[in-house]
Amino acid sequence: MSDRIEIKAALSVSDAGEISGTAWPFGSPDRVGDVIEKGAFTGPATLPMLFAHDQAQVIGVWDEFAETDTGLTVKGRLLVDEVERAREVRAMVKAGAVSGLSIGFVTKDAKRHAKGRTISALELHEISIVAVPAHPGAQITSVKSVSSEKDTLLENQETQTPANAPEIDQKALNAVLSRLDKLEAKGQRLGAPAIVQGDADKKAFVSFLQSGQIDQKALTVAADAPAYVLAPEETSGEFIRNLVEFSPIRAIADVRTTASHTILLPKRTGITNAVWVGETTARTASEPTFDQSEITVKELATYVDLSLRMLEDSGNVEAEVRLALAEDFGAKEATAFVNGTAATEPAGFMTAAGIAEVANGHATNLSADALINLFYAMPATYRNRGSWVMNGTTLATVRKLKDGNGNYLWQPSYQAGQPETILGRPVVEALDMPNVVAAAAPIIFGDFKAGYRIYDRVALDVMPDLLTQRITGLARFHARRRVGAGVVRTDVFRKLKMAA
Figure 1 (cartoon, rainbow, N blue to C red):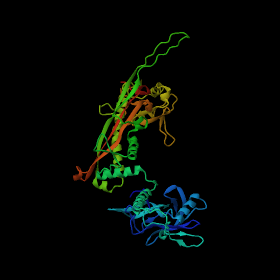
Figure 2: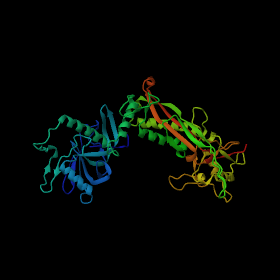
Figure 3: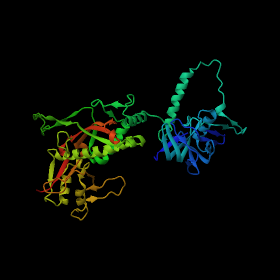
Figure 4: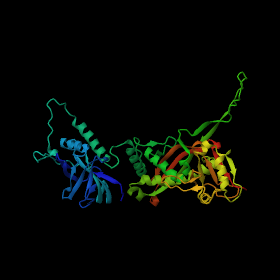
């Protein structure tokens, strides 16, 4: 089962902060169709008491739990003497402003059915006081008064309406309350105290993958491919982050987005020609020249097959599709960013004309002196922001190189999250770089942020095909993205050239 924490949602409180209630009623489903069986609950001896599942609002502790015939009953105490928020929550409970308990848990065993799940094993992580619980039967049962020690049953209290109060449209009120119930039930999932548009978009996207039906209010149809749906922002963002794992150049290049199929970049090809002059010497004119460089957006496309059973049973179908596409797209991008030459590919930095080369001096043996020469051949501004790029085989050779003092050029990283370095600059391992062979250029060093530009036009759009592969029990997902890339400045790069 998934290890995500889920939220499900009655209670009495005294002036001293003693609190009790029913955290989960047995025998009926919650608002999303889930039923928890008696005997399913496990957990530690004490649990934190939160307000609205906000981990920044710990207001007390739960230390008694019991499964009765009617449900899971709990007792605990609000830290009213120590935490101001706990005193505020006690006041809200006694005033009836909040009226429920809601549990946060990890499902250990469950069976799906048409309307939800039957959960037979779970581990409690926290119990929160909430305004509207996920289970409609989990309501506050009573509020204790210290003076009388009697319970005031909130659920049976009658609200007195002033004689001059305006007439209430009960139908409209019920519609609003129903909407609030749905929002609260969904919002009680841990880590999402409030419903945001991205949640609805992602849910609609998953539904689209499973059924092929497009929710026009939540999803966007690709303008340049009407049969495809654009992945929502959260999914696209995660997709780009996954791409970095397989396409390492993205981590060091200048990555931007564009709404155009072609990007024109002005480029200066000549400079002004100032000269030293005397007080009354005539000045000379300069005529700098300019040109344009062009980056064209290319298209990358594929499809992924998933079994119909996985599609129906998996709660993570969106993640499965995203990761599969990221691996494939990332590998293809990585190759193109390094060596792309075809008309349908982004332009690779190793194939760009005009990048200066530093001679290694030998056809097959890397020279430590040549690496040092290459490093200092770069202007200091770009050298101090540069990165080395090579494949793993070359990196293994470089790790053995020493300078004239017997010190290794390669320096390991002793700090978590920091890259390995050569001559103090980070190393990026790119599988598609050439090996150390005669006439090859196995190493490039440069300021990729200044010199190599990547433009994302469409991060990801997807079209499910639930019919053509059905005879083999599969569903096919066609996916495409559009990206362009190219070198915008050759002067910030240097290659190491092996002798012929």
